[in-house]
Length: 403
Image (cartoon, rainbow, N blue to C red; front, side):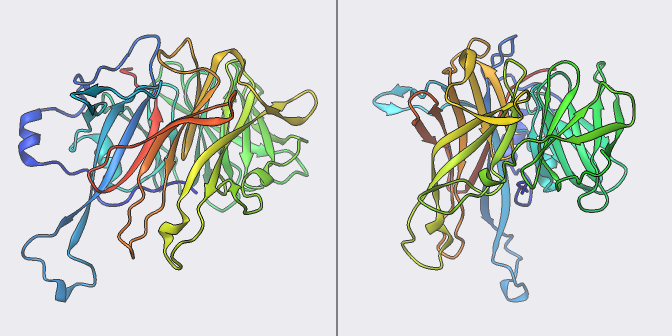
């Protein structure tokens, strides 16, 4: 289930708006982003806040409480080694740059579109009813892909080169359509995908990855099976189901002390062009007070990574990430970098974002966390809370870029 952002928009104080003077499309220049050939992953943090309605609001004439939902956001540069800066014996907050409340990214939040992933080129993807939007949080530039029809499912295929999307149009369980951004970066091309005769689609696509330079895509379906689409073949493209075991058991195994959330799994491309499947493991707390959602808060305790062995047609559990590889996992997105390619990253680790539920009955708001899990030591090395001013926060990883 893709996360939909809570309504309504990013809201800023009028005095701050006048002071900033930032226009749509301006590059954020008040954050020390390493925008070189070695981009460092940053967090995009948004926070839902609750503010009183206007004085003219009459609660007796409304079924809703006297509060309005607002959202503010910022790009946060966090120390990937887990260290905390200290000044005058007090921890210093990380460097941040506020999102332009009147920019294009803020408008996507305002429209409550579904976030479907972060590209490897610094863009965030949002799916609307009949279009997909790509926005750069640093420059606030926007691209729109008109899918000409209702986008029941839109999945970002990361990895490889360029940007690729798989979109299911119309009926449920329909064959997806591939949209590819041309090399010039200005035009999108549509490719029809058909199903190999006698094979079922396996349900909607929940994750996709583009491996290598030849445009070979691997799609993970709701039933846990994987299909392959070779974009290098003549049109129309064919989606072929691979005879490998289903990953359905890794979506929602038996509920016990350590379990994974349903659908909490991602396909990613390794630095060697291989297909990896990464899933989060959670420790669920015991219920303290019945009928309260906040008693279901869960803590991140680990990750499991599997490699697709194409020759042996099986999933092989990975105990160590090769070549100092690092995986960054958000609720709807995942990508890999190498330790040498991103300064400050710790190799053979999974960096994650943790989210906790909200209980409106008890007035408890689940906050976000970020941390790192060591594949070698098989433990969470550190986990820090995302700074919040009292509202419900959400966070995701992305690679900043000015392109």
